[in-house]
Length: 174
Image 1 (cartoon, rainbow, N blue to C red):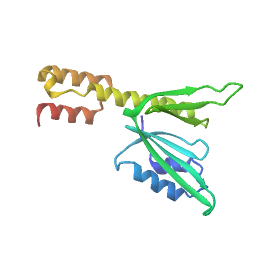
Image 2 (image 1 turned 45 degrees about the horizontal axis):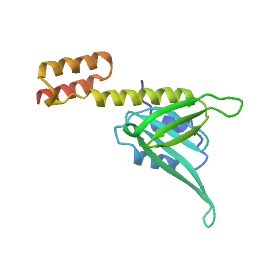
Image 3 (image 1 turned 135 degrees about the vertical axis):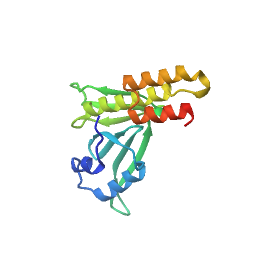
Image 4 (image 1 turned 90 degrees about the vertical axis):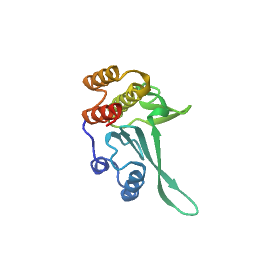
């Protein structure tokens, strides 16, 4: 998976409503080194999938007494997402994405590439949760077996080279 830049993503989205403000709001939610791996732009909304969360920027139209628009932003940590569902279009309704988050449902309306975003988001959530489950505990066993388990995670692709090296250093106390 190749990371994307925020500027690449915003170039593909509807920027008719104050793109500079939306960009600033999103930058405020992202960590400086947080990579973005997927995005989708349903009506008046932008969703990003990073390595550890989904970020949303939604256009909020304001009325009286101050007409205008505001970008509402939110971050949904993967540890708090229990499931993600893609619902196919039928004669009664269009396709949508449902994110089950902290006991409520976030419904994302159909948009170009929504199904691809679903697959990317689902993959990132599973990878994040696998890393959390697989993170070895130093007290949990002996060092040789922990190093073998860590190497197996690296070989299977759950950990990349940098994560593997950092975890190995942590285990051996270097």
